[in-house]
Amino acid sequence: MLKIKIISVGKTKEEWLETAIAEYVKRLQAIALIECVWAKNDGHLLELVKKESLVVCCDAKGDLMTSEQFSGFLHKKLIEGGSRLAIVIGGAEGLPEELREGSGCALMSLSRMTLTHQMVRLLLVEQIYRAFEIAKGSKYHK
Amino acid sequence: MLKIKIISVGKTKEEWLETAIAEYVKRLQAIALIECVWAKNDGHLLELVKKESLVVCCDAKGDLMTSEQFSGFLHKKLIEGGSRLAIVIGGAEGLPEELREGSGCALMSLSRMTLTHQMVRLLLVEQIYRAFEIAKGSKYHK
Image (cartoon, rainbow over the protein chains, first blue to last red):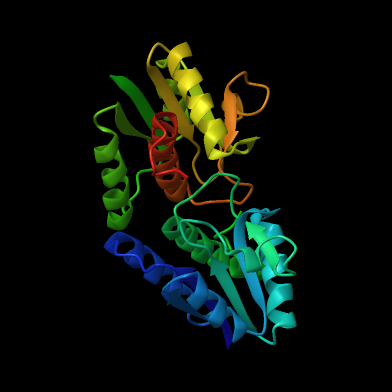
C-alpha cells in the first residue's frame, strides 16, 4: 500500500472542504492511503518534515506541471521514497525559509496564482487521484 | 454594480461545491454580482455566448497569470465590457472549437493541470474575490 502524507500548517474548519477531500481519499483507498496532518506552526512543520524520508513542497515558485507530468513525478517519487511520500503545503505566509528554493527539497506548483492553502489541499488530493487514473489509463482523465 | 456571469457546461450536483461557491458569491455581493449559468451542451453554450458583449474563456492552453496579473486583467476587462463580463468554462471535452485559440476570444488558464470543471468554477470565484481584495489592498492577499 502506498502512503502519502499531506502536511499543512493550520487546521481548516470548512466542512465543505473536508467533505470534498474525504470523497477523493475514499476513491484512493484501494491504491494509496492519504493521511492529512496539521502542523501548529512553521517550527512544528519542520519537526514533522524531519521525520519523513522523502518530502515534496508545494510552492508558487515551484515547477509547473501538467497532470500527466505530475502523474509521472508522483510515481517516480513514490519509488524513490519506498512507497512513502510527504507533501508539504505552507501556511498563509508560504513555506518556511528552510524548505524554499535552494533547500534541496523538490518544489512543485499547482498554479501561478495564489490559492488558499485549503484550496491547495483539495486540488492536490484531486490531482493525486487523477495521477493514478492517468497511470491506469481510465476514462477519468481524457 | 459589476456583473460577472460564469457560464459552464453541465450542471454540478456536489453540495459541498455549491456551499463553497456561495460563500465567495456572498463575500462579493457588495462589489459584484456573480451569476452562474449552465449550458446543456456546446451548442447551447455558443448560443449563450452570442448574447454576451465581452467573453473570456478558461482553457488549459490559455495565458497563465499570477493573482496580481489576473486582478489587473479582470479590472481591464470589466472596463472594456462596460461593467459586465462573461467567463466561460468548457465541459469535460474542453472548449468548443469556436471558442478556442484563434477564435479571437481571450483565453486564460488557472493551471497547467487538468482540473474538473467544477473545481475550475470554485477556483475562479475565489480568484475573482481575491482580485478585488488585491485592488483594495486588503489583508486577504499578501
